[in-house]
View (cartoon, helix red, strand yellow):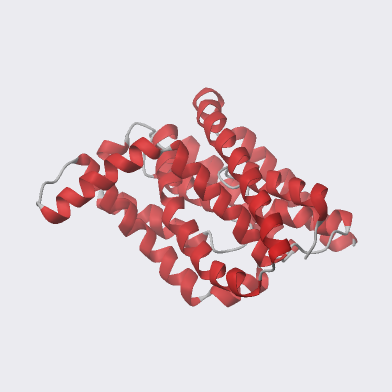
Length: 269
């Protein structure tokens, strides 16, 4: 679908801004369609901007990823284990629950991911959980103290993020805070978990994009990918600084406001 330069830029910026924040990117991508009457951009566009976000997180954490990958290889080939190899295994294992459920329920999720009412309700519910996790979590553990049990709990919370409006990053950060991780550790582990999940989703939908995309569409999709990547990179950088200073309360308030607005629009439309 030809969205035009303005809409393509706006939606790519919106996706890049919201993907790694605990505020539900699916809810924000829905707003222009519902409030402004814009046509649905479609799953192919969504894949492109998600790949842009993936490129951003790979670039931002490139040194950490390289270190984890080398440590993981040494643990596999030479049986040399370290805190880095354990963290790499924890990322892999924590990805499995959401990966399996997402693969099995891919069509179901796609069908209900555009429901404004569902996104509004889940936005408020998970805002409350995020607030509660920050209030009662000890916030004293860094990633070196992460355990298999904790990583699996976070992984199962990531599985819950398949519910539209939950926010993948919001769900994983909430679980991490409940388990006692610091804000920085919670955010970083959430970002690392995003890599295999977004990559897998992009691969599944990317096959369709390759089959049906035209030359004109590929140019628009590449542009959207780049815009999303740049915005995602900036968002990751400043988000890590912001939560260290003020915590997650601004995002809790924002989620509640957005949820109420979506529910109101749903019933008043």
